[in-house]
Every structure is written in structure tokens, then in C-alpha cells.
Length: 333
Figure 1: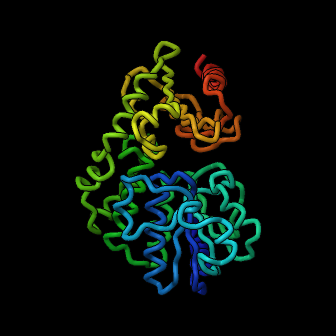
Figure 2: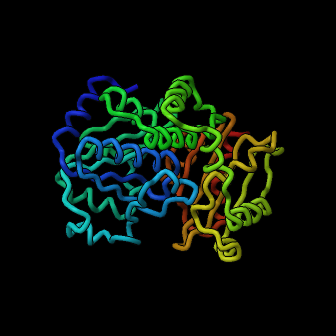
Figure 3: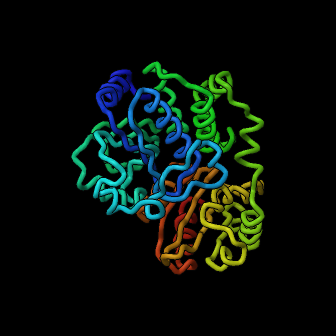
């Protein structure tokens, strides 16, 4: 856990600032989105001018967390425009839910020329040491846990908007309290967030029962590719660019689809291979058994957690599948 001394250092860093830029990793999940919303709201309430920036589109099922959609890099504003000051001048940059250059896409260029302090809040093991001050707690189930604890230490108000954002974030990274990172710490925080106004039934509906027809069709295409290996212990699935074209779905629609095959009782390890337009393969890995998928991801310059990790690998997809199969085999046999 993070010490009171480090929390105080973060507050001391934030307090004198007037203009803050907040961002997170590309392809934001619920933890990333929820933390951006919560931190933006809190610092705005402190009288600071806060500019959130997303590095890629917000998945539709997290849009309800935002009162106003933040600008998207390369869609609403370019990296050159940011360099030229069109997003504003900042005396602090806060990066949430990542400490990895390769997850920041072109925004990494801003850090290269930046001379302002950078504050990192993250719970991942993989780190590039991007911050002048880093609040890192790999035992936290979600970065939102760290954000919540910072708020409590600082005495910042947790209104219903912030509570919804942090609850959604923790639910995402614990798989709605199904993953083995679900602990009493997370549940106690969520109990406080419910007391602050969160409606869990409504939250579950907004996050998990609002598939578009396109996303449902994409899931069907993925399930058609399902293969089981090692007596059903390892499940592989894939999606091609043609699947996105046929269904009308987009990349964000793949979030959490990997978990569908984990409903098969024999499955201990799952992988989803997604063909991207840039001739790379996005590989998502999940484990509910002894296999450490972070070790597999790190071998191919990816990262994540012991039970959930990701990689970008070169095409073709069959080659990526073979490489991951061989690594899974080493741990299963």
C-alpha cells in the first residue's frame, strides 16, 4: 500500500498547480475512464483548470460516466497541436492507470519534451518510470483504489459522480467482483461508494447489459473461432478485420469478450487475437489457474498482471497464435 508520506507528496505537488492535464492509456477500459472522471471532477472542485485528454475513443458503455466527452487524440486534436499549445499550457501532467510509454501512443512525445512535473497513479507491475512522483500499488485491484485512498487522505469530496466513476472502475478490473484480485479492501471501498449514491443494479445494466447489435454480432464471430487445447485447459479465439467489416463493430467492442470462453469449466487460460488495421495483432491473455500470463506477455514486450495481460505482436495471426501456444505449453505441461 502507498504510505501517508507519498500521499502527502502528491497533495503537495497538486496544491500549487493551476492548470492540469489528465490522461490515461490508449484503448481505455473502465478503470482508466473512471479514474479520469474522478480526478478531473476533484481537481476542478479545487478551483483548477483541468483538461482531460483521451488517447483513443471511449467505449460506448463507459460514456455515461462523462458529463462532457473529452477530446480524443488524433481525432479532435493532433499531437502537433498539443505541442503548439492549442490544448493549453499546463503546470502538471497526471497519468492514470499506466506507467508505460507504449500505452501512451504519440502522447509519449509530449513527455519527451515536457519540463513540468508528472504524477503517476497506477497498479500495474510493468513500469517505465515516467513520473516525477509515482503512486504505485501493485496490490490494488484497480488504480481507482489508489485514487479513492488519495481522496480520503486529502479530504476531497466524493460526490455521486465521483462515486459512480470509481465504482465502475473497480468493477471493471475485478470482473464485477469475480476475479481473484477481489479483496476486502476493494469491497469496503465499494460499500462506501454505494453509501455515496451508487446504484449497483443501474451500474451493472449500463456496463454489461447494453450491447449494440454490432457488438453482439462480433462476439458471435469470435465464438465461432473458439478452439480448445490441452484437454480444454487453454482456449483460443480470434477476430479478423473482415469480422469488423461484416458486423460494423469497432475495436472497442472487443473489451471483455475474451471472458466468454472462460465460462467453460475446463478453461484455465484464454487468449484472444485481434487483427488490427496497422498489420499488428492485439493479444489479450487471461488466466484463472497457475499460468502467469504476465510472464508470457513480457517475453514479447507486453505487460499487465499475473492473471490478465496484453501484447501487440506482428502479423500474421497464425504466427502469433503459435508463439503464444508454445509459451502456454511450457507452463501447462
